[in-house]
Image (cartoon, rainbow, N blue to C red; front, side, top):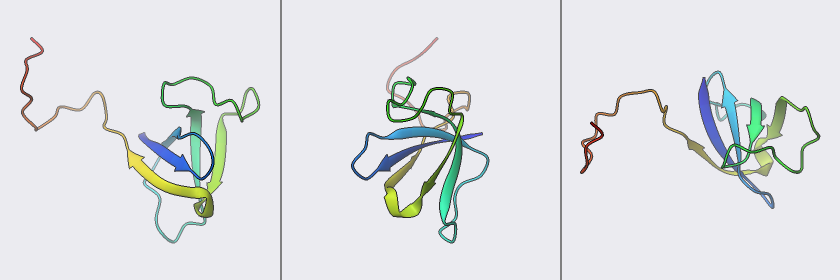
Length: 81
C-alpha cells in the first residue's frame, strides 16, 4: 500500500492509501482511508467514508510518503540504537 499526500485546491491536504501510483492518463485518484496530515478524520467528509475519488482537476500537488517500515539507504546524522 502506498500513502499519498494530496494537496487539493481550496482544501486542506489529504492522505490516501492507494494500490498503485496514479498515471497521468487517469481521470481521478481512487484512494482508501482518507485522513488529514495528522491522521485524523477529514472534516469535509461524512462520517464512515472509507474510499474517495478525487479528480485531477482539483489536485495541485501529490507527495509520495515514505514507507515507515522500509530501511533507508540515506545516512542520518544521528543514531537510533
